[in-house]
Length: 195
Image 1 (cartoon, rainbow, N blue to C red):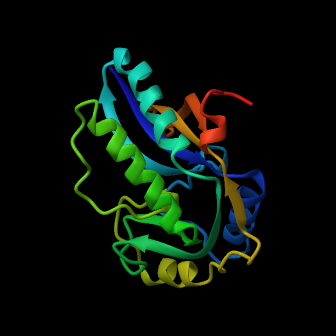
Image 2 (cartoon, rainbow, N blue to C red):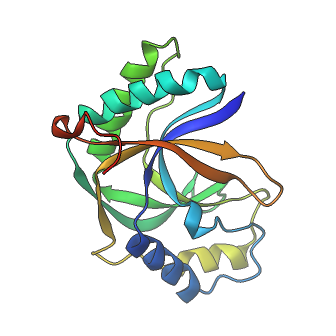
């Protein structure tokens, strides 16, 4: 069994802007571990533990889902938290542009994997760039630090032109991600897995 999910890669420029925004904030001594920027991604659909023999079929599903979606721009904005920034369990940067297109891509993936016998995800899709998972309640000092994290600059954007099928290896230091396959977006590229 392997743990897999579909995702979108984050550009190096956006990673640098995110890192700079966190470093410029007054946050210090936080009770969580920041996710390594090298691991940043937008999750499109988490599959979870699945039989390794399903990977080829999940690849075909990903290819079909991506082929039915044109490339688009995603722009990131302000810091957010689930359920909110006062008592966050997850910290993230919001997607301020391209959310509808990401949702459409997620819907394409849902349609394709349903053909393989996977149940539709009942939770509404919400696109966000995860920065940290918060394991315990935060105090007022940390809340003030979170409010000091600047909104990302207006040019914190990137083109989304590929869907990835990724594997997650769980480790004590956090998840390690491996790209299993990638699928170009748009019908003109359906025959090519790699540029």
